[in-house]
Length: 329
Image (cartoon, rainbow, N blue to C red; front, top):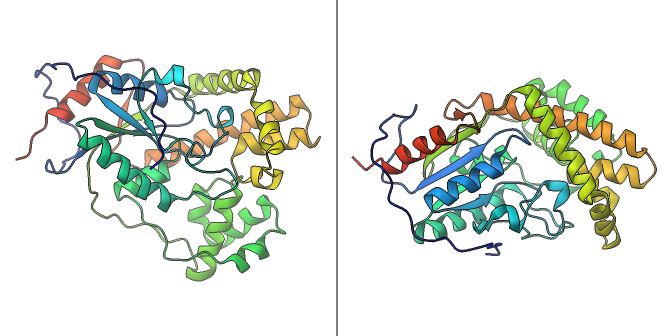
C-alpha cells in the first residue's frame, strides 16, 4: 500500500463527556468507527477534515478519483504538505495518470487503509469529491455486474460527449439526471451498462463493515460560487497551466487529459489553441459550478448525511465527540 504520510500524530487528549445529542440514525457499535466528510467542490472539506484529525487523532483517506494520480496536484486541488500540517494522508499519488484507477480499486485500497489506521488506534476520516467512491465503501451502492467491453467502447470514441449524453438521456433518463455530461469515462461506462442491461440499475444497499458518521459541508450558493472563483484563480496563479504542460511533456496525452476532469480538459483545450485564456477560465469556472450543483443533487438524496455549517467548528466537534463516545450495547 503506497501512502503519503505527511506527519505523525501525538497522543489523544482527554475529551469531555458532556455531549449527549443523538444523531439521526442508528449504528452497530461493534464495528470500527469511520468518518466521512462530503460536500460540493470548494466547500471546505479538506480544511475541516484536517481540523477534526488534529483534535481527534485522525488520519485522512482521500476519496478523490483524480488525486490518486502522481503529478496531478493543482488541477485536482490536492492537499499540500503545509496544508496537511502533520496529519497523515492516504491514497494520494498511488497511480500513474496514464493508468485507469477505478472505484473497485479504491474500495480495496481504502479498506486496507482503514484497517491500518484503526489498528493504530486512530480515527479514519474519508473525504473527497468522489461521492460515488464513499457510497460504495458505505454499502450505499454496488457496481453494476457488467464487465468492460473494449470493442463496444472503441465504437463510441467517434461520438462527442454531447452525443453520448443524448444516447443516455434517450435510454435511461433517470441516469441522465445524475451523470456528469462532461465526464467522458462515465458516459461511456453508462452506455456500456445500458447496452447489456437496458438501463443503469438502481443500486441496492448492503451492510457496511463500518460504523459511520457522515458529515456534509453545507455552504450557501453565493459563498460557494465565490469560493470556486477564488480557488480557480489561485490555482491558475500557482501554476496549474504549467502543471498540465509538464504532464503533457512527460507523455500524458491530451486525449487522456480529456478523461481526467474539467481542469485538465479545459487547460488542454487552451494549450491546443482551441480556447483563449479568458475563454478557458470563464468556461471552466462555469463548468465547475455546474459540477458542484450536480454533487449537491446527489448528496441531498442521502438521508444519513448530517449537514453542518463549516464555520461552526465547535458544534461539529460535539457531533464527533458524541459519535466516538457511543458504546456497544
